[in-house]
Length: 301
Ligand code: 0X9
Ligand code: ZN
Image (cartoon, rainbow, N blue to C red):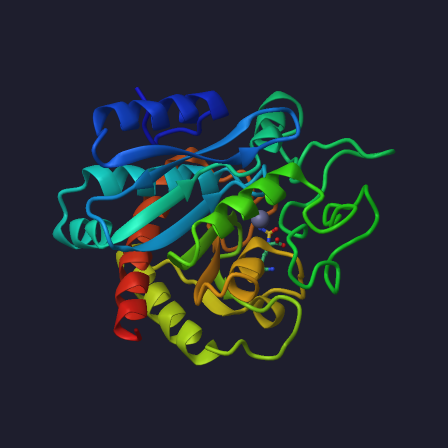
């Protein structure tokens, strides 16, 4: 059976998503966010308990090697559907959730078969494979913190949305037509909550709100185990980086609450390989932060 004591393959997670849908058919709908270069689906779930709710969009796995991301995202799905905790039930039932644990499935499969530390997509170039799916989105594309060299880990692609994964997923997000209020992208590692922008040190229009929500979220996160996060704009708190999904969601889709989580560890020689004993603790503290994030965002309107 599927659990969070270990990491899973793509097929295990996709089978689990389908099994959750068949256990909870009135609450879960399978959604396809797009497709991949190698022909896989970007498979997700819409979780909805009543109509008329605002939407929260969650993506995991845009960077293939960051395995704690899909593991945390599937844990969130499970909690939203099955938890009996009152705070989680209230949150779960107050939003429509659009959740994709793996938005770079080809890359993730490659981390299982061939190279555990693969980051990018798997579309062939002339000398190297793949583009950085978090530099390929059509907002301030290639303006800073991205590479035009196809072998680079931060290769932005031939053009904005050159990758079928980002192109098709962005079309899916756009098709939701303003229903999404919060966009979350899960990565690892560094223990950070980052918000727009990545292309400039100019503050985003609602910078003060984004900082206040992040402060509430990291405070709640720290309560359970003392895990320390920092927050700030991507540009200032980590490094300049244009063409990310979160900046596109915020800047091109006007989604006002948009964060990149960099999950555990804080730092390590090989931080992408987080021991599986840390999946559940990471997921639990992240759930705590999500409850605080949604409450604080609601209180700000
Ligand atoms: O470089 C990235 O894409 C992210 N860090 S990672 O180590 N997981 O690769 C940071 C993305 C920050 N978000 C934005 N650029 N908005
Ligand atoms: Zn990442």
